[in-house]
Length: 200
Ligand SMILES: Nc1ncnc2c1ncn2[C@@H]1O[C@H](COP(=O)(O)OP(=O)(O)OP(=O)(O)O)[C@@H](O)[C@H]1O
Ligand SMILES: O=C(O)c1ccc[n+]([C@@H]2O[C@H](COP(=O)([O-])O)[C@@H](O)[C@H]2O)c1
Image (tube, rainbow, N blue to C red; front, top):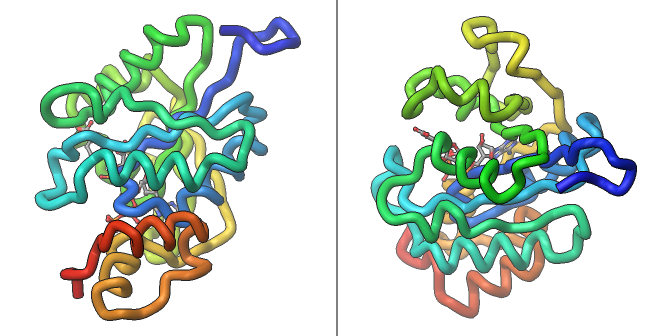
Protein backbone atom coordinates (compact mmCIF):
# COMPACT_ATOMS: atom_id res chain seq x y z
CA UNK A 1 0.00 0.00 0.00
CA UNK A 2 1.36 3.47 -0.77
CA UNK A 3 0.00 6.77 0.44
CA UNK A 4 -1.70 9.30 -1.84
CA UNK A 5 1.59 11.22 -2.32
CA UNK A 6 3.21 8.13 -3.88
CA UNK A 7 5.70 7.60 -1.04
CA UNK A 8 5.74 4.33 0.91
CA UNK A 9 3.04 4.17 3.54
CA UNK A 10 4.25 4.65 7.10
CA UNK A 11 2.31 2.51 9.52
CA UNK A 12 2.54 2.50 13.29
CA UNK A 13 1.99 -0.79 15.09
CA UNK A 14 0.75 -0.44 18.67
CA UNK A 15 0.87 -3.91 20.22
CA UNK A 16 -0.58 -4.53 23.63
CA UNK A 17 -2.68 -6.73 25.83
CA UNK A 18 -5.13 -3.82 26.21
CA UNK A 19 -6.81 -5.34 29.27
CA UNK A 20 -8.34 -2.75 29.03
CA UNK A 21 -7.07 -0.14 26.56
CA UNK A 22 -6.58 3.26 28.26
CA UNK A 23 -5.65 6.85 27.47
CA UNK A 24 -1.93 6.12 28.01
CA UNK A 25 -2.02 3.82 24.96
CA UNK A 26 -4.02 6.29 22.89
CA UNK A 27 -1.82 9.30 23.67
CA UNK A 28 1.33 7.29 22.90
CA UNK A 29 -0.05 6.23 19.51
CA UNK A 30 -1.24 9.73 18.66
CA UNK A 31 2.09 11.34 19.59
CA UNK A 32 4.13 8.84 17.58
CA UNK A 33 1.79 9.29 14.60
CA UNK A 34 2.40 13.05 14.72
CA UNK A 35 6.17 12.91 15.27
CA UNK A 36 6.88 10.15 12.73
CA UNK A 37 4.40 11.38 10.10
CA UNK A 38 2.49 8.11 10.14
CA UNK A 39 -0.43 7.48 7.80
CA UNK A 40 -2.09 5.04 10.16
CA UNK A 41 -1.61 3.34 13.51
CA UNK A 42 -2.75 -0.27 13.72
CA UNK A 43 -3.59 -1.40 17.24
CA UNK A 44 -2.86 -5.11 17.65
CA UNK A 45 -4.36 -6.75 20.74
CA UNK A 46 -2.36 -9.79 21.81
CA UNK A 47 -3.85 -13.27 21.59
CA UNK A 48 -2.11 -15.14 24.38
CA UNK A 49 0.69 -12.99 25.80
CA UNK A 50 3.20 -15.61 26.97
CA UNK A 51 4.49 -13.52 29.87
CA UNK A 52 1.06 -12.75 31.37
CA UNK A 53 -0.72 -15.53 33.24
CA UNK A 54 -4.36 -14.46 33.39
CA UNK A 55 -5.90 -12.19 30.78
CA UNK A 56 -9.46 -11.31 29.81
CA UNK A 57 -10.77 -13.22 26.76
CA UNK A 58 -9.35 -11.78 23.55
CA UNK A 59 -12.72 -10.84 22.04
CA UNK A 60 -13.49 -8.48 24.94
CA UNK A 61 -10.04 -6.86 24.66
CA UNK A 62 -10.42 -6.61 20.87
CA UNK A 63 -13.87 -5.00 21.08
CA UNK A 64 -12.75 -2.47 23.70
CA UNK A 65 -9.86 -1.56 21.40
CA UNK A 66 -12.25 -1.07 18.47
CA UNK A 67 -14.50 1.15 20.61
CA UNK A 68 -11.58 3.22 21.91
CA UNK A 69 -10.09 3.87 18.47
CA UNK A 70 -13.29 4.25 16.42
CA UNK A 71 -13.38 8.05 16.41
CA UNK A 72 -9.85 8.50 14.99
CA UNK A 73 -9.74 8.05 11.19
CA UNK A 74 -6.03 7.09 11.36
CA UNK A 75 -6.47 4.39 13.98
CA UNK A 76 -7.37 0.83 12.99
CA UNK A 77 -7.39 -2.51 14.82
CA UNK A 78 -5.93 -5.78 13.58
CA UNK A 79 -6.94 -9.31 14.56
CA UNK A 80 -3.65 -10.91 13.44
CA UNK A 81 -2.53 -11.79 16.95
CA UNK A 82 -5.87 -12.90 18.33
CA UNK A 83 -6.66 -15.06 15.29
CA UNK A 84 -3.26 -16.83 15.36
CA UNK A 85 -3.24 -20.02 17.43
CA UNK A 86 -0.77 -20.22 20.32
CA UNK A 87 1.34 -17.70 22.21
CA UNK A 88 1.74 -14.22 20.77
CA UNK A 89 5.17 -13.10 19.63
CA UNK A 90 5.97 -9.77 17.98
CA UNK A 91 8.09 -11.53 15.35
CA UNK A 92 4.86 -13.14 14.05
CA UNK A 93 2.89 -9.89 14.34
CA UNK A 94 5.40 -8.04 12.19
CA UNK A 95 5.74 -10.84 9.64
CA UNK A 96 1.95 -11.02 9.24
CA UNK A 97 1.59 -7.26 8.88
CA UNK A 98 4.40 -7.19 6.30
CA UNK A 99 2.60 -9.83 4.31
CA UNK A 100 -0.63 -7.82 4.43
CA UNK A 101 1.10 -4.51 3.59
CA UNK A 102 4.29 -5.31 1.66
CA UNK A 103 4.86 -1.72 0.54
CA UNK A 104 4.63 -0.13 3.98
CA UNK A 105 7.32 0.78 6.48
CA UNK A 106 6.35 -0.36 9.97
CA UNK A 107 7.00 1.54 13.22
CA UNK A 108 6.49 -0.60 16.32
CA UNK A 109 5.41 1.55 19.27
CA UNK A 110 6.40 0.43 22.71
CA UNK A 111 6.37 1.91 26.22
CA UNK A 112 9.54 2.23 28.28
CA UNK A 113 8.70 -0.86 30.36
CA UNK A 114 8.15 -3.08 27.33
CA UNK A 115 11.18 -1.92 25.33
CA UNK A 116 13.42 -2.63 28.32
CA UNK A 117 12.55 -6.32 27.92
CA UNK A 118 12.86 -6.53 24.14
CA UNK A 119 16.17 -8.39 24.03
CA UNK A 120 14.35 -11.27 25.76
CA UNK A 121 11.59 -11.44 23.15
CA UNK A 122 11.43 -14.32 20.69
CA UNK A 123 13.88 -13.92 17.76
CA UNK A 124 14.86 -10.49 19.11
CA UNK A 125 17.77 -10.14 16.69
CA UNK A 126 15.42 -10.44 13.70
CA UNK A 127 12.95 -7.81 14.89
CA UNK A 128 15.11 -4.86 13.78
CA UNK A 129 14.84 -5.79 10.10
CA UNK A 130 11.04 -5.84 10.22
CA UNK A 131 10.25 -2.49 11.83
CA UNK A 132 11.67 0.66 13.27
CA UNK A 133 11.03 0.69 17.03
CA UNK A 134 9.75 3.78 18.83
CA UNK A 135 10.14 3.69 22.60
CA UNK A 136 7.85 6.16 24.35
CA UNK A 137 8.31 7.54 27.86
CA UNK A 138 6.12 6.17 30.64
CA UNK A 139 5.90 7.51 34.21
CA UNK A 140 7.67 5.27 36.69
CA UNK A 141 9.71 3.51 34.01
CA UNK A 142 13.07 5.18 33.41
CA UNK A 143 14.30 4.25 29.99
CA UNK A 144 17.66 3.33 28.59
CA UNK A 145 17.88 2.23 24.97
CA UNK A 146 21.68 2.27 24.87
CA UNK A 147 21.89 -1.55 24.67
CA UNK A 148 19.66 -1.55 21.58
CA UNK A 149 20.78 -0.93 17.98
CA UNK A 150 20.38 2.84 17.84
CA UNK A 151 19.70 3.11 14.13
CA UNK A 152 16.62 0.91 14.62
CA UNK A 153 15.25 2.41 17.84
CA UNK A 154 14.05 5.95 18.54
CA UNK A 155 13.00 7.52 21.79
CA UNK A 156 10.02 9.85 22.10
CA UNK A 157 8.91 11.79 25.15
CA UNK A 158 5.09 11.77 25.32
CA UNK A 159 2.72 13.52 27.77
CA UNK A 160 3.03 11.63 31.04
CA UNK A 161 -0.09 9.67 31.93
CA UNK A 162 0.42 7.50 35.01
CA UNK A 163 -2.25 5.04 33.94
CA UNK A 164 -1.94 1.26 33.72
CA UNK A 165 -4.41 -1.49 32.86
CA UNK A 166 -3.48 -3.18 36.16
CA UNK A 167 -4.57 -0.09 38.07
CA UNK A 168 -7.82 0.16 36.09
CA UNK A 169 -8.70 -3.49 36.77
CA UNK A 170 -8.01 -2.92 40.46
CA UNK A 171 -10.13 0.23 40.57
CA UNK A 172 -13.09 -1.55 38.97
CA UNK A 173 -12.68 -4.42 41.42
CA UNK A 174 -12.69 -2.02 44.38
CA UNK A 175 -15.69 -0.10 43.02
CA UNK A 176 -13.70 3.04 42.13
CA UNK A 177 -14.53 5.03 38.97
CA UNK A 178 -12.46 4.68 35.81
CA UNK A 179 -14.09 7.57 33.97
CA UNK A 180 -11.46 9.73 32.21
CA UNK A 181 -8.80 7.02 32.52
CA UNK A 182 -10.31 5.10 29.61
CA UNK A 183 -12.65 6.33 26.83
CA UNK A 184 -16.31 6.58 27.85
CA UNK A 185 -17.34 3.70 25.59
CA UNK A 186 -14.80 1.45 27.32
CA UNK A 187 -16.22 2.36 30.76
CA UNK A 188 -19.65 1.40 29.47
CA UNK A 189 -18.36 -1.84 27.92
CA UNK A 190 -16.68 -2.85 31.19
CA UNK A 191 -19.91 -2.21 33.10
CA UNK A 192 -22.14 -3.97 30.56
CA UNK A 193 -19.99 -7.12 30.53
CA UNK A 194 -19.20 -7.11 34.27
CA UNK A 195 -15.45 -7.15 33.58
CA UNK A 196 -12.82 -6.89 36.34
CA UNK A 197 -15.30 -7.22 39.24
CA UNK A 198 -13.13 -9.80 41.00
CA UNK A 199 -9.88 -7.77 40.83
CA UNK A 200 -8.61 -5.90 43.88
N1 LIG B 1 0.65 5.12 30.45
C1 LIG B 1 1.42 4.70 29.44
N2 LIG B 1 2.29 5.55 28.84
C2 LIG B 1 3.09 5.11 27.82
N3 LIG B 1 3.07 3.83 27.31
C3 LIG B 1 2.22 2.97 27.86
C4 LIG B 1 1.36 3.35 28.94
N4 LIG B 1 0.61 2.27 29.29
C5 LIG B 1 1.00 1.25 28.49
N5 LIG B 1 1.97 1.66 27.63
C6 LIG B 1 2.61 0.84 26.60
O1 LIG B 1 1.60 0.28 25.77
C7 LIG B 1 1.94 -1.06 25.37
C8 LIG B 1 0.84 -2.05 25.77
O2 LIG B 1 0.72 -2.02 27.16
P1 LIG B 1 -0.26 -2.98 27.99
O3 LIG B 1 -1.45 -3.30 27.17
O4 LIG B 1 0.52 -4.08 28.60
O5 LIG B 1 -0.75 -1.93 29.12
P2 LIG B 1 -0.33 -1.84 30.64
O6 LIG B 1 -1.02 -0.66 31.20
O7 LIG B 1 1.16 -1.90 30.77
O8 LIG B 1 -0.99 -3.19 31.18
P3 LIG B 1 -0.75 -4.02 32.53
O9 LIG B 1 -0.83 -3.04 33.67
O10 LIG B 1 -1.88 -5.01 32.51
O11 LIG B 1 0.61 -4.67 32.39
C9 LIG B 1 3.28 -1.37 26.05
O12 LIG B 1 4.31 -1.09 25.13
C10 LIG B 1 3.32 -0.38 27.20
O13 LIG B 1 4.63 -0.06 27.57
O1 LIG C 1 7.69 -11.35 21.08
C1 LIG C 1 7.81 -11.51 22.31
O2 LIG C 1 8.48 -12.43 22.81
C2 LIG C 1 7.08 -10.52 23.22
C3 LIG C 1 7.19 -10.60 24.61
C4 LIG C 1 6.49 -9.69 25.40
C5 LIG C 1 5.71 -8.70 24.79
N1 LIG C 1 5.65 -8.64 23.42
C6 LIG C 1 4.78 -7.65 22.76
O3 LIG C 1 4.89 -6.37 23.36
C7 LIG C 1 3.65 -5.69 23.27
C8 LIG C 1 3.25 -5.21 24.66
O4 LIG C 1 3.05 -6.37 25.46
P1 LIG C 1 2.34 -6.28 26.88
O5 LIG C 1 2.47 -7.68 27.41
O6 LIG C 1 3.10 -5.26 27.66
O7 LIG C 1 0.93 -5.87 26.62
C9 LIG C 1 2.65 -6.69 22.65
O8 LIG C 1 2.52 -6.40 21.28
C10 LIG C 1 3.31 -8.02 22.88
O9 LIG C 1 2.97 -9.01 21.93
C11 LIG C 1 6.31 -9.52 22.65
